[in-house]
Length: 301
Ligand SMILES: C[S@@+](CC[C@H](N)C(=O)[O-])C[C@H]1O[C@@H](n2cnc3c(N)ncnc32)[C@H](O)[C@@H]1O
Image: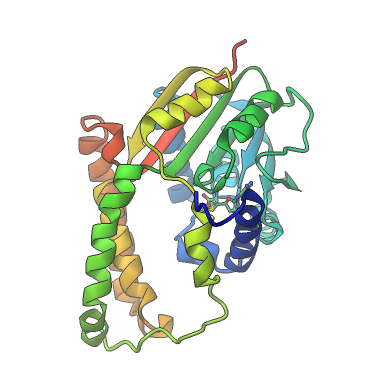
């Protein structure tokens, strides 16, 4: 966590950054609510649990963003009633629009993960995707997850950056940044316009991510809040390097000039490499080297 900023400043930066990001978040990250998205989230839950998932009656998502995890899990039939919370009202607004378009009924509640406005023991599943690394006081947040879960309930997080995996991902980012002028010339693209106000404040980007985890730290965070059956696993290696390379290149160009064929190549290549990671690498290599970590644990019954 940046020593220069207080926890309140980090929370405020997260709110502002994600409010601005909300409009174009789904297109930027290729978020899908069809078969592809449902397949992705179901695979994540299966991997995190290490078994076929059960059906959960009442779920609470932390940092739900535009609904990637909860809306897809509802459509896949793994969640009955979903409550989606986020510190960014802008993200929740996009989530409500997505839910309406998909014909799904969800409760939304603006909330900081460290202070959840829900009664004790009111959920069977507390879940999140790519959110723990934004939370300044993790022990406090995990204590809240434990409090709002019913006895025997499950906590499940995926998409958290691993410390070592994050460092490895800097390599493709730097290489892509260095070759981006050549790449733009090859596809005849202009530079990205400076000071594009539709983009989130770039200065906040380094502020909103406050952790990258070693697997043992996630285990410790869960055990420290009295969770049991703690399981931490790793996800995405080659797919991630490929994804960061392409996103860094694309971010350097005027979006209108990036050809559709390139976007398709980037998208399909990412999916193909995800499959290689899933079938060959994830079952064999240590969790710490993957870009994303996932955690599953239970509240004692
Ligand atoms: C990287 S986005 C992930 C969104 C979504 N879960 C997904 O996977 O697409 C992180 C989300 O966490 C939210 N967030 C950041 N800090 C938070 C906090 N302290 N409490 C609750 N949500 C937070 C952000 O507003 C943002 O929507």
